[in-house]
Length: 470
Image 1 (cartoon, rainbow, N blue to C red):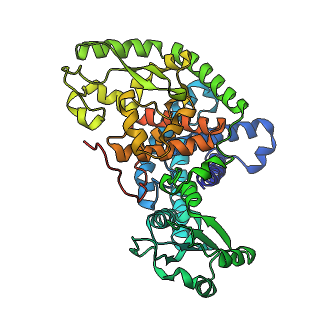
Image 2 (image 1 turned 90 degrees about the vertical axis):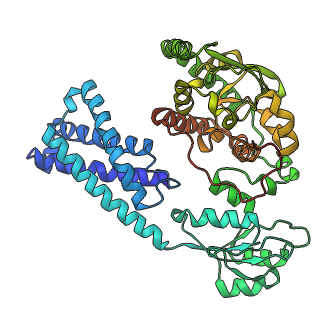
């Protein structure tokens, strides 16, 4: 949906910018029949529209998890316009022939902003009404059902509307929030289907053995009603796996986890090429950061720690030191337990992810790829294996400098948050591809550029795991 909105707005901005330039420069539309005039008008309009869309992307205006409401959009729009002007200044410096006069540029940008506000106001108004929505009936009223319902309710752009759910007596938690009204017990499935006429049925039962109404679901499927697995719907909407609802057999027989040698070879080649170039380009910056670390606090510039790598093999991970050297006492691995040791420079390095730059060396050594699950300290591995389902699957791929869990969730401070990150890691391993890696790299650059860290992600409505949380 974000891609469709970006293309729609880019097209509208290109047309409006072209029209404004024609009017202000007193040209006729017939002047565009001349190739020279066409280039002189379209290139400035193209530059403005592309700069706008890029700045909107980097200000999360196409991320419906963040710009959910019109108010959220307006608050970020002013910052996006400022970035647009900066991008245009760079473009005009590099290509002075496409430069517009100040008055023309000001009016063009002002009119485009007004057009964009009107377009988005209409967009959000349409989304609120959810026209032509598919009616969704959820089987189950437990945690998975509630999580799916909340994801659908928070994403009106999906054009899904929940009509209710059927409760299962086997589920102990049958609370019914307003977004998930209970229409009756599972035994009334056929009657409820006849009454509410759903377009989709989402099976989100906690326990299916002996509880799944196979006959009614088959009849529904052949009647044209889409029947979907709740765990698959959750995965598609949340960008992570509901690992409590995933069975070992579903992982064993899943074709998504099979990756041929070619994608892995392409991923490795891309990692080596980018790491080699990035090491050379960022070498002066890394030297500067190292000197600043030494000036701010005593101790080495680099922090070296043993982490778990591919197939469980340990390796020595390199990072810039962001904390004061410990006093020798036993320390927790959790970031929140070491806040008192973070330096001022260290906070900036963590927020901008610049503390990870030395890991380009780990990529060149073969310890890591650019993208993958973040490597865990050896000291935490045994605890995580016992507490987090399918934890060892993280080691079937090389760890990464950045990853899907890093851009969607950020740092973990306890075992429950590590479990949340595991959901994203499994999603990445399941859907790993070159295109996915490129998307993650773009998102990582956005985080580094604005220093925002990962966005607040939705949390699975499951039980917090027992274990160390301090």
